[in-house]
Image 1 (cartoon, rainbow, N blue to C red):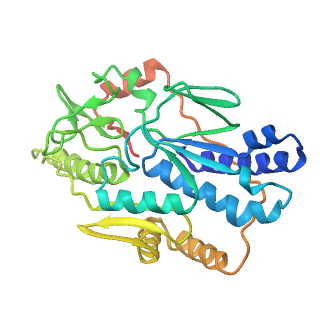
Image 2 (spheres, helix red, strand yellow; image 1 turned 30 degrees about the horizontal axis):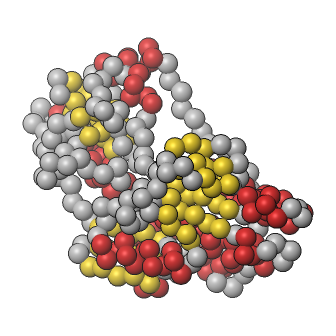
Length: 316
């Protein structure tokens, strides 16, 4: 789960599963079709699991009365001891309590060892029979990096200096998910959007300084906070030290995301869509969407890395 096309594909697949289950009489096959496994209990996994449960409870079950609701099972696989590892404990606990209320089954201390066409096997030997496995466990570095000739660390990212430049490559900047940048505590900054956006803004200013013949300035990350949506009209947030959860936090979450949209027209369309959701039943129609893939040859990547004018960026 990474892009809009992935989310639409998952939604279409869940609708297909309900249509198949509605036609079947074999109970075990229905159980497979109605178990949805989300792997990874970070913010993406938590939001995906809660949205899947909302789609099922508020849209699909009312439209498929022949489906046995007791067979529906949304499972969130968590390798740690609580969801949202690394987040503030109050935010994580609030999110987990909401997941329990939504009937999302969280399996702590579990790791996936293998995924088949109709099962997910865990390292403890147990197996979940399912036709749906959604991977939300971590963010991988772009495969483009392996073709640039830049030095990579164990995570496949480029360790950068304080100004986000590659050591011994003063003409190359690496940002976001592609970079390993150590914070004040000596730990690498997480692969979050706000890290990438702040690095992008600082690098733009540094590029201007370089053009003027001035020295660059180091990047300093400011943690604005964390926010996660957990189902309909509920969110858990921590913003500039203030923690909140529930409906008010959900309004804050939506307002912040709305403010990040580019263009007044896009914002207006989203506001109208959200407003209609309050009064009009949500659609269960399937939507087609494709995902764009970027391919680059090794020679092109090497040329980009050695160019005096190109900044290599991977923005989350």
